[in-house]
Length: 352
Image 1 (cartoon, helix red, strand yellow):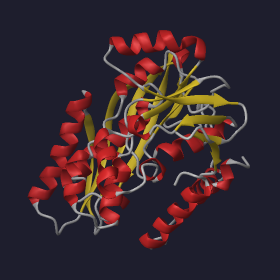
Image 2 (cartoon, one colour):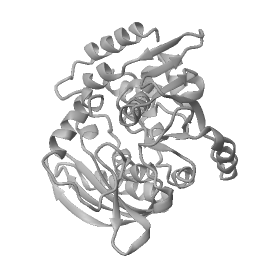
Image 3 (cartoon, rainbow, N blue to C red):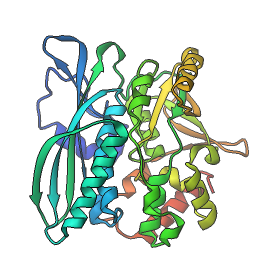
Image 4 (cartoon, rainbow, N blue to C red):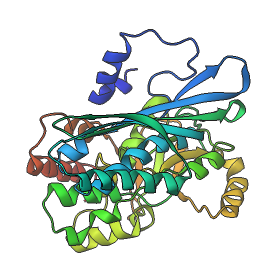
């Protein structure tokens, strides 16, 4: 747990986990899966996948201002966790706390966002609870089944495996930068942030992958966490035009914000980062193409646990994400300090 505990968030999680008994029916250990995987008595073919997620801080900090976005993300964030374990979803239950000062139209837009997300995925809200509070909080708990013989977690990649990203990344950090730096919304309108949980892709990936995690915390943080739980490293080609979603790449070109910022921030989207054994890559890509899925090849897994970026110059730099991950802790509200810290980090590792 040494490398895991270098990250403050992981230490916080561990400080809670240690107070509870681990269920004998639970397959995964802490940090090992996006959703919890449970044995089902009498069912030898499937595991139960369960996850819970809240949208609250993003609303309180003004990151999400459109109530449609709030509802959309509250659904997608949960089903993205199921996608990352390759689950066949059953549905979701919601616990919703409304700000009583907001009007009916505001609440209706949240509901419309939730309904649109469910329609996009072909899933259902099964029930839930409503309440009032001074701060809006939208909490979902989603359920699904995973075939036992296709179990997929964050753990299991091996040196030589190929690293893939389901689609272009960076929209979450583009929205975050636009809000926090008080840039014109014309540069990156909130409506461009409509991340989609990759349920169908996850169901296909589970047949091939050695590990998988969603990018809800940002691409580089996802890679860093996979590095720590697997004790393996990644060599990633820094081809930002390929890695970033097209609107994000344009946003960086307009603003002069370094491309790597869009991968290194803490507010991601719901793409999948996963690894495929080299000998299965051709079969995987052929199968993916058959369902209109064209993942982005990021790089390879290596034995040494370090995150290496292969730059256009041909230089390879090994970077440490811990300083950036530990920067975003409660009380770190000085944006100018955070941006300076990012620039200093990028210069240290030769990304600027």
